[in-house]
Length: 332
View 1 (tube, rainbow, N blue to C red):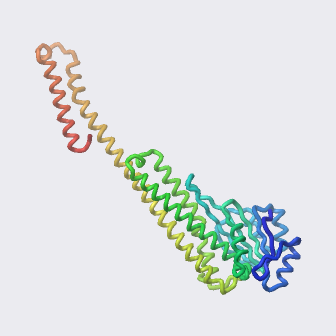
View 2: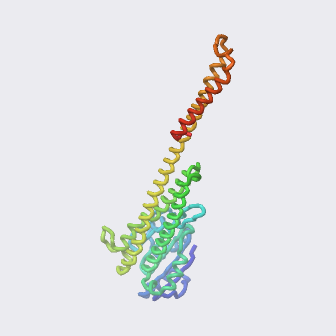
């Protein structure tokens, strides 16, 4: 469905069009105007009309409808197609949620298609309408503002993940929580969230590098103003910081998991030593009692008046000796 549709001229919104074809013709008739249409999870029938009016490439249209795309930038004859993956993080459930945002840029038009909830397009449009200077850059200004907003949210998510990782580290090395049977599951779940985050941030670097003029191809990206390259370089710098943070988080989580497993292994060894020590202490009286429980007739100690207290003292002496030995070695 169409969420918003408007013509912008000289950085100002001049109203919403009734007919897409007439609105596009009106925008193209002026050198300082463009048309911006925002759609949310459009159906194939709804999007066919937009694709036909703006001459969007069928492959890009298919990607915009089916979603589940990696961040990318594709150049077609009549338009530029950019895919971004906005991300939000819910601290209560330790869950990273990703959406998808497709941007079509062409001659005097911008078409944005979003899938999922964590997509801050409404706030981007409102913010742009309060900044006529940025809107005067036309579709390029819209693409920059969208990319900048998405990457800024990446920075926020990276900070929240870092905070939660510190709490997880504290829990792992705590004597009580560190031995919890659910700790390994929590660490693995957290690592899965980082992997989901990386799927959104890492593939976005090459498209931003092309927009910033840092691509190895060296070719100019059509429908994007040359003087906008410093702005996209700034977004790329922010994304680089995010990717470095994500790599560091991934390594730290792996280290935390390894430390937790090592702790559990040491703890299991300690438990086995304690069990072995108690078994050894139980073996001595069991052996002595087993010998005197055989009921042989000719056993010299059976008729001795001090047999019973002597055997008890011997067993007690062995128990004290073994206990002190195991205690000194740290097995008890």
